[in-house]
Image (cartoon, one colour):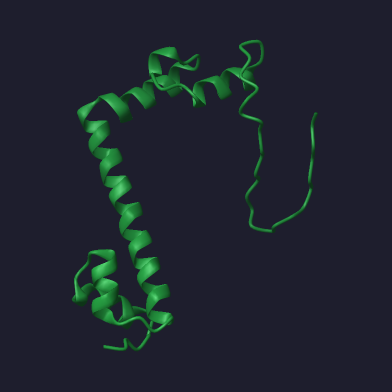
Length: 119
C-alpha cells in the first residue's frame, strides 16, 4: 500500500519514507532495503554501497573517519545540551559534571549564546 502525504516543508529537501521490512530481492528498492539491514558488506547487493560500508567498518582508515565523525556528533550534542541547561539556569559546575566537560568549556558556550551562567 502506497501512502503519499504531499505536505510541503519549504526547506528544499525531499523525504521519502519506505517500509524497511519489504526486503525482497525482486525489486531495486527491496535489494536496497536488504543492503541497509546487512551487518556484513559481503552480503550486500549494491557493490558501491558494499565497498563504502566495508571501508568505513573494516579498513583502519575508514574506522578512523567514522570515529572522528562520531566524536563530532557527540561534541555537538554536548554543546546543545549545555546551551539548554544554561537557558534553564543550571550552574556551570553542574553542567560540566553532567556532561563531563570542563567548566571553562561551559563558560565559553555561555559566552557564545550570551547566556549568563548562574555560577
